[in-house]
Structures are given as C-alpha cells and as structure tokens.
Length: 77
Image 1 (cartoon, rainbow, N blue to C red):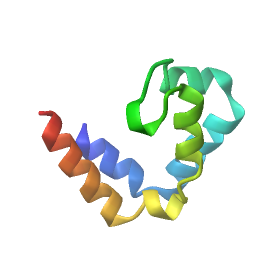
Image 2: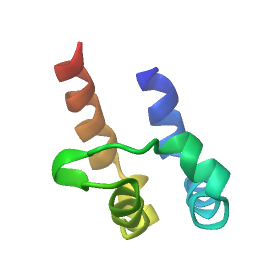
Image 3: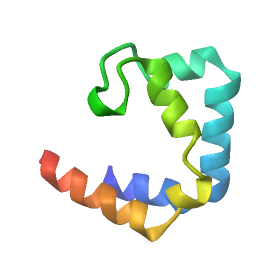
Image 4: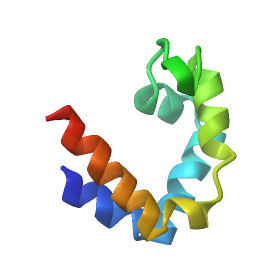
C-alpha cells in the first residue's frame, strides 16, 4: 500500500485529478472522506477537505511528503 501512495504522490497529474474530484464531486468527497472526527486535522469532513485543498500540489509531490508518510505508516504497523 505504501508503494502505491508513493507512486501517486510522485504523479502530479494524479494529485491534480484527485483535488479536482474533491472540489467538483460530492460523491467522490463522500467516498474519500467519510463523516467523522479527524482530530487535529479537522473536526469535520469539510475541515479536512479544506485543509487538503490548501496544500500546494508541489508540497504533496515533494520527497519530504513521501518520507513523512513512510514514517507515519511505520508507526501504524
């Protein structure tokens, strides 16, 4: 799973398509972000989506983002 995430983050067109889906499709938003409390990232799905939309695509595609996700993933297993 981590390899797929790394692959997606290194693909700028994927990030753009994903963000476009979030902004244009309520069905896509509902599938990707179910209702819930996302803690420090947002108390609602809308807050989490707003946070994600405000991250520059270049930041998501950076090696630092991938390294951060690797470390976070290792904490989960």
